[in-house]
Length: 129
Image (cartoon, rainbow, N blue to C red; front, side, top):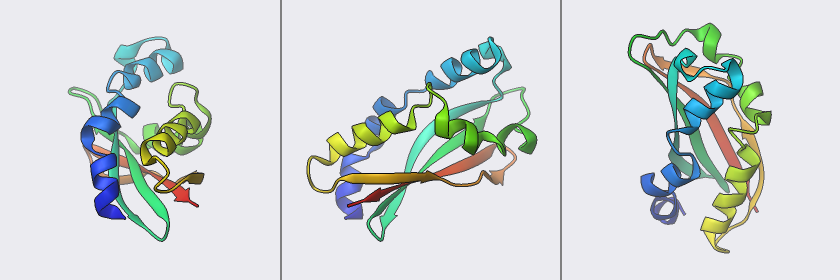
């Protein structure tokens, strides 16, 4: 299944699902100023297992900004319901991309993990039926 998903959830399709400018829209909605954003957000495919798709929101530190834990640790709860992030819409679009090979069921957002001072991730898992 991972091989099929690699071709369906490639970088081009993920960029369409979650374009780079969404980070600016998110910061504009959150702070009223895109220059307040400390990171860029990228949706990344990490693999699949046990009838689930493992994705992550990668938070990449912007030049001259600090990717402090206090900025990112509360984000999973914000991402779950924020209309700019639109997780429900992402799941619906992935369901369309799967074209009947599998169907998206429910999803969950994990806790923020600090990979490096320049990169934090928020795990995003979609369960399939």
